[in-house]
Length: 194
Image (cartoon, rainbow, N blue to C red):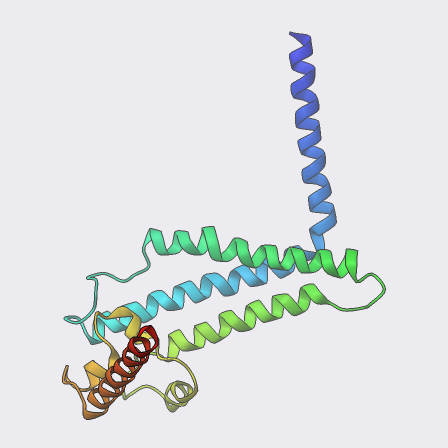
C-alpha cells in the first residue's frame, strides 16, 4: 500500500513540477495571451451584435429566428480559435528565446500584434456591416474597403436582396460566359479522346 502511495506522490510531484516550470518559463507571454483573448472574445460579441442587426433589419429573410451567438458558436471560439492563437504566441516566444537567441526580435509581440490586427479588422467588418442610412459616414466609409458580412446570415446573396430577388443582366451574362467556357473545355476533352 505504501508503494502505491509513493508512486502517486511521485506522479503528482512530477506534474506539479511540470506546471511550475511551464508557468515560470512562459510567464512573460501571459499579458500577451490576455490581450489576444480579449480581442477574440470581443470579435465574437460583435458577430453576435451583427446577427441581431441583420435579424432586426430583415426578419423574414434571415436563416434563424434567434441571433447566432449560440453555445456551439461560442464553443468553437473557445475550443478552436483561442487555443490556436495562444499556441502561436507560445511558439513565437519559444522561437524568440530558444532559437533566435543572438538576434533581438520581439517575435511574440509581433505575432500577438498580427493576431490583434486580424481580430480588429474582423471587429470593424462586423460593426460596419448591415448599418442603416442614419448611421454615421464612418461606417459607410469602412464598407467601401471592407467585406460586408451581412450575406453570411441569409439564405440568399446580397445581390439578390438588392435586386428584390430578380436576376440581373450582368448575372445572366456571367452565367452565359461560364456555360460557354464549360462547353469549350468539354469540346476540347472530346477532341483529345478521339
